[in-house]
Image 1 (cartoon, rainbow, N blue to C red):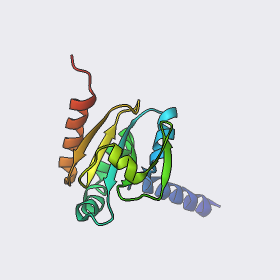
Image 2 (cartoon, one colour; image 1 turned 135 degrees about the vertical axis):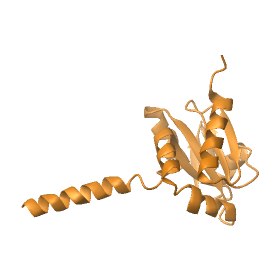
Image 3 (cartoon, rainbow, N blue to C red; image 1 turned 180 degrees about the vertical axis):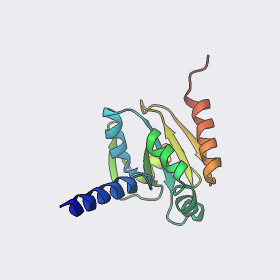
Length: 151
């Protein structure tokens, strides 16, 4: 019995530890729904399947423990394929494909990171590939400039 308890304890710790070793990516409409009950900023990773720098962000920046912890703690993270015209969702009373949403957010280069404030009214963009520390610094600077009240 003691061995069984230890095994379950180990599995629980392994599972809960595992949940923080990657970013929790949501679909756009899932992030909007989560935001209704617990308001947070949305971080939308706008990418394309052919974008090499997007793949490099996924492989290097979005696997960094500091980036994972920061994004999971402060944002609802969304992956949005700028060329997907098939998958649709409703947002603010309108139907959008992922491609239409990327266009509505005026994204024209990839990768591009769109930050949406919790009231879902204002956005700001952080374009281009960045290594982990530069990504975090750029994200913090963008939030300070775009969303923090000026004294």
